Structures are given as structure tokens and as C-alpha cells.
Amino acid sequence: MTDELSRQRRILLRSGKSPFDVASLEQSLDRDVFATNAGNLIFSDASHKILTTPRAEVFSNGIRTDPSAAGRINEEYDVFVVPLANAFRPTFERPLKRMTQLIKKLRIPVVVLGVGAQADLKYDATRLKAMEPTVREFVTEVLNRSASIGVRGEFTEQYLKNMGFRDVEVIGCPSMFMNGETFTLEKKSESLTAESRISVNGSHSAVRSHGLDAIIRQAHERYPNLRFVGQNLLEAQLLHWRETSNPIGAQTSMPTHPSHPMYREGKVRLYVDPATWIDELRAFDFSFGSRIHGNIAALLAGVPSTVLCSDSRTLELCRYFGIPHRKISETPKNIDPAELYEAADFSELVNGHKERFLRFTGFMERNGLENTFHHGDSGKAFDTHMSKLALPPAVRPWTGTDPDSLSSRFSFMQSRINELSTENALLRSQLEKKAGPVSIKLQTGEGAAALPSAYRRARRVVGRPVRRLLRPEQ
Image 1 (cartoon, rainbow, N blue to C red):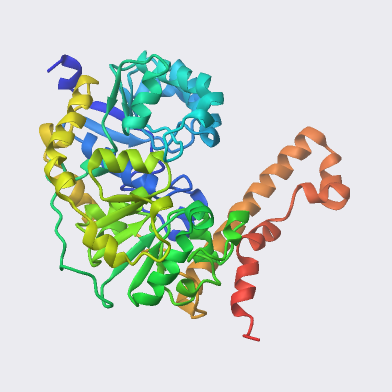
Image 2: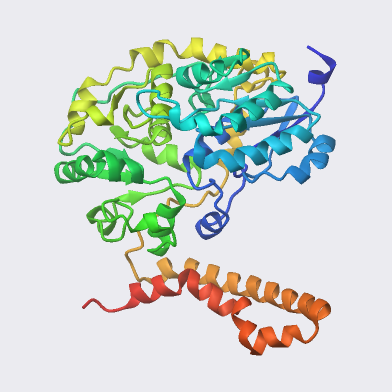
């Protein structure tokens, strides 16, 4: 053990929030603690737990990258750990560039825990060609500060090796190692029945482009205890506020849309904390759908799961971990979840888990990181801490008008009005100092629209859905 590892280390972890950060549903959605997708918290919470040892303390830096914070990070932390998902995709190129700008300024080690490239099910990387310089620069800067880079699976490994990188290790995703080297999973019954509790998940793209809506619709007709678990911020907004500014939210075939039967029946959930998510899934018999971390959450709860893969990012993880899966393009639209359940074989997942875990921890050790299972208490203190937290409940469909369902929303609205009033007052004061008479023009003339009142801004957040909900049925 080196002198560096023999003392308390301060690890900065890229994550939307610390697992111990408790916030109300309204605050969580307003802050977007899961960076638009709650699945991100599954692997960031797992990373936090795995990295916590007697000689290491873990801190969350939030999800937004600020290159100007490099000086402070160099002074306050010993290593920057970056768990990533499908970061090598065109829509993530700008954030990836900002992350590279930050890493360039860091003098401390930078370790990437499982990054992935996103392509189609045929592993065709053509669409990634234009962003290759960005990926190359990012990986180069990471490797200048670490022994190797950890990737999610075979496709990403080959993608980087085709660019000439050799220090690439397939380690999967930290989420699967949340409980260490053991992974037990058994089917509760030989087959599913009409009374079985089934969880289904899926993205807007899988519903829109791959026919997942038909699969969900027929499962809803066959299984009264079916529940849809959403993951996106826009889905959370639809559940909690009944509307979202994101145009994708208008997709009525999604169970998170207020017009969908599953929404109206209250059979939809979304979780802002993985601990609650995993705990509530324990009562289910089966999980399926196109969301990789939605199904990993179920697997961590001991629930048999099958992934309907729609792209390389889910396919390579399923292949690496031995998670039962099918390509959604080859799945009949009238498939019965009972068929998926019967065909699911978990022997590869369970039997190969220890070897994959040792590969993962070996990667960590080669990059100077300890883990709680070999160097700590196997996460017992972490789990105890989590069990004592009063985490918020799941986000549910807003279908009622009782005082309890309204009070938290109105309370949040009032607090936002107060915050925005203070912000407006500060802005007006700054404008008066800098522009003099212009501030009067802003308040009373044609410039008034540039500085909307706190009331108008808060009303836009919750006013319309509240009015809609309270309007009598026609």
C-alpha cells in the first residue's frame, strides 16, 4: 500500500447528487438531480458506495461541468472519478467537450468508470464519425491521468481501439456491483399468471420508433397488476405537474402522459432515489422493457428481468453481464411477458458475476482506487446510513384534488415566489446602479417583458396544471 493510499483520501465523484442528499419531490425535479434520467443515479449511488472506505471519503460535484472549478478541485481533492453512461453520442458532444476542458486543467488522477458509445444494434459507428476528434481528445486527456479507461462493453472497446487506444478495459457498469461479488436471483414461480406483479419500462424513442407501446398496451390488458416505471425528467414533470415544456412529452402513447389509461389508473411511478426504487421493486415478480437501468434496478431487487434492446448501449451491457435480453426489432409486438419470463435464463449472470466483479475491482486498483468490499466494511455503514434517511416517495400520477396532494405543490410554489421575488429585487438593484433610468424603463415601459414578475414566472410553473386539475369535468 502506498503512502498516498494509507491516508484519508478525498474523492470527487461526478454525480447528480449524493445518495445522502434528501430533498422533496418538488426540489428534486426543480434541481433535476438525476440529470434528466433517473437511471444515472443507479450507477452513481453504486459508485459512491463502492468507493467509500475507511481511507476514502466521497463527495458529489453535481452533474454540471465547470472548467473554472479546476483550481479548487486540484486543491481540495485527490482524485476525480467519473462514472458515465452513453457519453459517446452526438447529443452529448458539447458536455463531453466541457468535461475535457476541465480535465485538461486537473493535476490529480481522473478515473472513468464505464463509459459507452451509442450506435444501432448492428454496432455501426458511422454516426459517431463526426465527433471522433472530441472523443479522441477526451480519452487522451483521461489516459494522461490514469492507467486505463473503463468502458461498458465490447462495442465501446472496439470503437476506441479502432482509434488507436490500447489502455481500454471492459468493466461494465458500477451499478451491477452495488452488492459486491455475490449476485443471487431466482424465479419466484414457474410461470406468470394474471395476478403476477409486473414492472415495465421504456423510453419515448422505444415507444415511438420500435412499437413498445403495443407491447405495453397488450400487457396492460392481460395483467391488472402491471406498473410502468418512468425515468426521464419530462416524465416526472408529467406525473407531478401534469405537463412539461418538453415537446416530446406530448406523446400520448407513453404511460406517463395524463391521457394514458395507466396514468389515469395510477399505475405509473418514477423514483428520485435508487434506494426507494429498488426497495419497491422487491414486491414484483418480473420486470421487462427497453430501459437498461430500469431493469438493473429490478435485478438488484432480486427480480427476474429481460431487456428489450434498441441500441448498442443496452446490447453490449446485456451481453457483458449475461442479462436476459432480446432485440426489440426482433420482438413480436404481441409478445406476452409470460413468454419473456419463461425464456429468461440467469445462469450466466449469476455464475459469471464474481469474475466480472474481480475484473472491475482490479481495474480500480490499477487506477489507485480502493473498494469497500476488499478494503472496507462491504458497504454496511453506507447501507445503515441509507436506511435511516426519510427519502421522498415515488412520483405518482397527479389524479386527485385532495388537500394532501395539493399542499406540497402550493408550498413549493410559494417558496419559489419568495426566491424569485428576492432575485428580481437584486436584479433591479443591479440595473439601477449600472444603468440608472433604464431600470425605470424596464419596470414601466417596453422593456418590462425582459424582467417578468416573480408571480408570472411561478404561475407558469404550476398555475396551468392546477387550473386544469381543479376544473370541473365537462
